[in-house]
Length: 63
Image 1 (cartoon, rainbow, N blue to C red):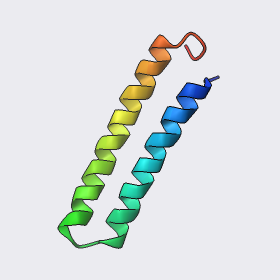
Image 2 (image 1 turned 135 degrees about the vertical axis):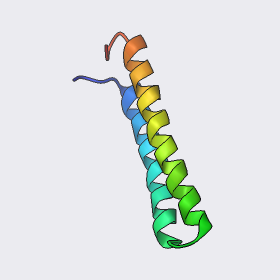
Image 3 (image 1 turned 90 degrees about the vertical axis):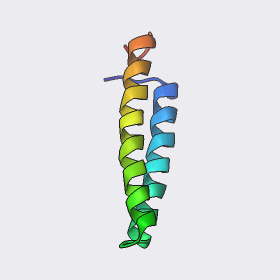
């Protein structure tokens, strides 16, 4: 599937954010902050999927 620059940019931003949250969760394992970061990372994955799916539906270059 060929994607445009905007798609790659959005995906990279979300993946970076998810990586930060997962790293925080690993550093603080066993604490409430770790659980919160893990939940936020899962939520961010869902938001990323929704955003990219929406983008592909609207973008003439990707769709």
